[in-house]
Image (cartoon, rainbow, N blue to C red; front, side, top):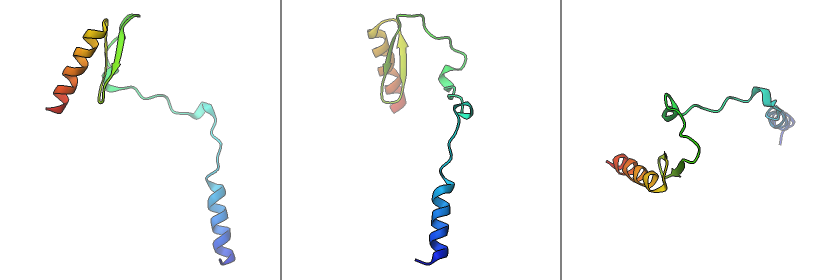
Amino acid sequence: MRPSTGLAALALLFSGCVALDDAVSPAPPVLGSDAGFDRLDPGARNLDSLHFRTSAYSADKAEAASQMAEDLYRK
């Protein structure tokens, strides 16, 4: 290995080591599905399916909404 190649590799290795403060961390993204909708009251059930997260006040309704969303997605 030529000396200039080794120095370039070493410089590249150390140039990527940068500590970031927590203050410069990006804000969590706002989901499009959250825009304009209030959260459900405490006690609501959440169900995550392959493509969607559904919320309802009973497990049966959450399952039905999840299944309908997945069926519509497949169409």
